[in-house]
Length: 383
Image (cartoon, rainbow, N blue to C red; front, side):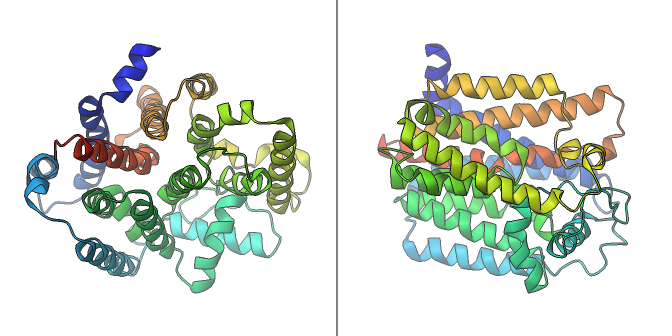
């Protein structure tokens, strides 16, 4: 265990691990969608992409030593990124022709939820059913009422960037964190397609960052509020429980019984109300068993999922600092989602239908880990 933790604490080694994960997540988008166009050969796109990533890595080690990153540059970058992402939300005029269905699934799920209808037995125009949990619907409803569910990516970018600015005082770290999310192909893709997958993990990432900064001495100081927040976040995407376990399981184990009871009561009440809002419209219990979101969100082998959950519980007792929470979250989520893609390949899925987007669940944790590593290098005088 000590050797594993020493490896996780190795700043230089983890820098390359996190950057490699970041590159792989985005490279798969180049491969999958590059083959669908005829203008530029896919291998040229791959070469250009890899060269751009090498440039970014060199920038980390060399260019940032020579450039003074000011507050003005940080906030200007955030402003321009926000404007750019607002533009991306309006770029596609005919998603039906491009066979993009995520936006429609979001919209009918929200429409059904608001009007008290059952969500999980309705197919979209591509024959897929909804897997939305009520916590994610709660975060999406405001953007639905605004008329463009794609705005959640704009809000996610702003939320993530503001959390970085608040959590890291060095402008170089702030600038790099904002840029890495802004130029991520997987995040760009979601903004264009009005998807929301990565937003669930950005919300979780931001919560961990801000809660740690506010309540580092005792995470369960506001146990009722914590239970309410987690009751919502845990019902966005099932995978978010992994970083939350790494972050909070040992503190929960060590908390006073009064805090535990308050937390459990608040969490159960919040989660119960949200679950009731999507399940009560069902015809009967058998109908729920046949049509439910966990069938769509729990695609990986159940034994693999249990293994990674137990691994997260185990590691939670040995984690020493918040940096390790993000390092392990990125690695475990990346491995879990990678296993799902591997399972699809073993089952003979066509490469065009591989769920490569799932790897992007690790993206926000990967970027925050990279920010911590950059911060350590700066403090050690390496940058």
